[in-house]
Image (cartoon, rainbow, N blue to C red; front, side, top):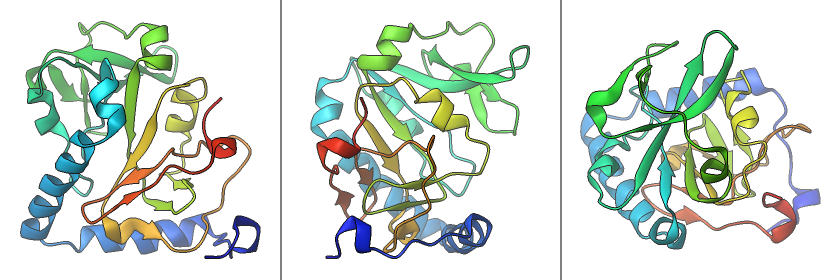
Length: 204
């Protein structure tokens, strides 16, 4: 494998988003359901899953893995991003179950207004964060939708962070990564788990 500094970098984010969004949107419902089941099994097999107090999940937009079945797992606190309109930012809030999720800013499910905001220290150190993305590379690089919402949410997180996507979303070439882009400590797909990169690429 090429060393990181020798790997070609795909630089046009808009073009890349189009390529990888098309790949995941063309999956059949049957393929998607089977892939989701495999992804859930792999997540439950992570060491970070067995040791975390909380799981920070994302609600699918219909083309991303469906992680909501994890809400049935016992002994965990479940967090989801929620948009705070008055501040123009996202925060993590805790839910007791799927019934406490409502359509949010972009029509994607998020915690209802009455759900409590998650304690900062729990978000920072006691949570396994599962993060969506349009694409991920083999070094933990992530291509998001372009708003930088997750990069800001995860800026001070010191616990485990893993991408969650379908295998067709993995880029064999390095994705463009800016100064404030957050790298994953590994990525879970239905076919394989991209291992965590070296310590120098993990969170502080």
